[in-house]
Length: 294
Length: 326
Image (cartoon, rainbow over all chains, first blue to last red; front, top):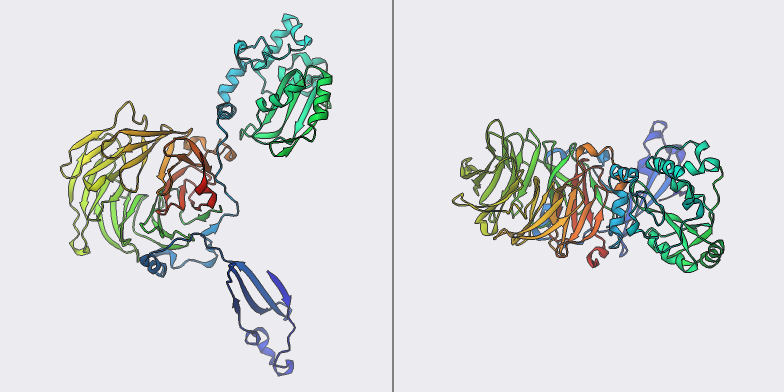
């Protein structure tokens, strides 16, 4: 909408107007003009009015007329179009705005590619069931040490390097404490218990995150799964952990993840090679994961 | 696409129906007043005032002159579509639930709920061409199913009546003698209440949606199960595209779970499935509550959904919808 003050010579002179006319000068204004709609559906409405200061203002409203449904209407339907309103619709205020066009663009959202679906269901599934799983200390993978995620026979990391010594060589007593805290993975952990000396008692996830040779991958596309990242980083060396951040509520990827390498050199090479690499229509950013600041 | 939001109802929507030309959309809600809208731009044309209870369903005659509505005020009413005047009231002793005009608009089927010791029933009424000849007597009354009958519609050539409801069984009745002809298999059939039923354009098959989180496609003559569409949520409403091989399922979680669910989790979607491959092809989000009603425009180029949130959302498909590949 464009508003411009139009100074046009008016036929009447100021002196000829009477004082009490002051408010109602609308007869001085040129009539409303409607131009279009043209072939692009652009319609222009030109109106004039006085603003508070008494100046004449030209208001040009440009709208695009869009046909929502180009349905071929039957004769009857055309007739119905001119039916007069009845019931409550008769006294409808102009401002009631019963019918509005959504301001939000709604898309027909395609489901995820087949194969990724089950994994997603797991994430979005009943949180209680998941907690139960996490608490099942019985389910400890002997190949990678992950708890409550899978059995040893189904370990996705079984062809990878052994977990770091600090993990396997731990005395059995600390194993049990770790298992016990693993059960309360979702619970609040006070800052004093996080990282540092208390690292060993914190759940496996927390400890592993702080591990060496961790590479952060950002600007991932939403469709990227952990298996994709693994495939991408595997050629550079043994990968000990792949993690993609997932929004708990929506089950959607948050667009970043971490990859841990067994050897620092491999991680270095992966960063050099993959930083700026175009992956699934986005350009990856790969860098060393910054150690937690606590 | 940018859906058109219509906020004419104060209470949850219960039913949506397009007329045959697809230019009018009728909406029923729990707020006593069925409403008619222009289906292209969503403008409200009028309301039908007179019911004294929630309106559960409606049907419009083929020539778009008569509307029939079934309401919880224990009546079903005939209306003049153009003016909104009441033409006739069928009185029952229990709430009326589902209404459907037969082909030719000379008969209508109305179901009533179990109420105060009365069992549910399916009534067949004669619809007179002239208003003064209209009588309230039923031609046939069918009884038998346990619990509420949520939907009863006419089968092919008005020879049968297809009913479905709380007992999760789909039944086919002879519309003249009132004899029960077929019942759906306990094995194949739904496990929980059937909430909705939609006929195909040629009435050769129909779709039922159920709280057992599935929808099933049945042959309308033999009542053999053709397809099953499985979803994660109870199905409250179903619709079938007259243009493409798509079915739409609308639902939501139980009312008790609504407030504890993040709306981004996308449970209030209308889900599109490929009719033949039974695979999900897409979802349309937008409602702030479970979807209670769905209807496809007879031209297949738009559809509308009515939700527990009181809104009717009218969606005109973008062109890419018509090129979806599974």
